[in-house]
Amino acid sequence: MRCPRLSELPPPPEGKSGWPWTEGHADLPDTMAGGSAWPRVAIVTASYNQGKFLEQTIRSVLLQGYPDLEYIIVDGGSNDESIGIIRKYEEWLAYWCSETDGGPPAALNKGFRHITGDVLGYLNADDFYLRGCLPRIADEFQRQPLVDVVYGNGHFTYASTEVLKPIFSDQWDLRRFAYGACIIIQQATFFRKKPFQNLSGFNEDNRTCWDAELLVELALAGAQFNYCDDFLGVFRIHEDSITASGRFKEQLRRDQEWIFEKIIGRSRSVIDRLFELIYRIQRFSSHPYRALDYRLFFRRALKRWWL
Image 1 (tube, rainbow, N blue to C red):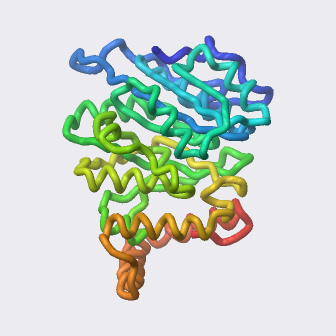
Image 2 (cartoon, rainbow, N blue to C red):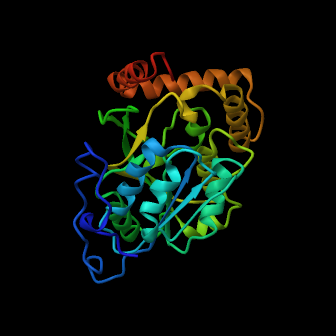
């Protein structure tokens, strides 16, 4: 499906303006530079009771001006305004459903079973893409045919405002990733269909960091990663989100330990605490102002220190 124009979508809610409410991306030409076809990009959004954010998410995907988009929404049986919002945009969706599921990783697996696209991504229902994200990613995959995963930078934003704080991904390093010293922005990450389908999908037993585990599985299977130095997506921080709420603190610790063992091949030991400290100090030292700025941002957003 070619992305709809701004004039074809329902009008935005009263008081909403800017991207992606009253601004869209210009239509792209039918073919890429050189005459090759645009790769089909498939995006899956898993959602549950995120109605206050969901419409912005949907519009940020549909208004990319992209010539070959496949967009899927899997709702977990929301009882807020989510279903009404999805129905407003259903004619531009390749598939959607609303039914009880086993949580976000199960919903994503369900959604990806319906895709036919060549380049894949997933976007949480409280996050959104920046204008030009999909064309930029398609171009990156086209220029680097041996690359399996492309990821870029993003922004943090608050729950109720559009104040954006830049956040940068690191160069991919699997060992540093195990020690928490390599950050990849999920909202700015995309991958090819074949290496993803060679895996068993998202681990549905991982309730907190299934996105990180997928990257590890791809890397261990030999996937090639490439850093795109551009801003692609926005990660919304609010107290109800899984990442920031702290509701799953113990589960997060268990999931992270499982990922560590998968990478390193053994349980974490005392010496690993030292390695983690060294890697984190190195990362902090390379951008100290940026690291402190992030923590101040979380303090303002959540009224507590985080990370």
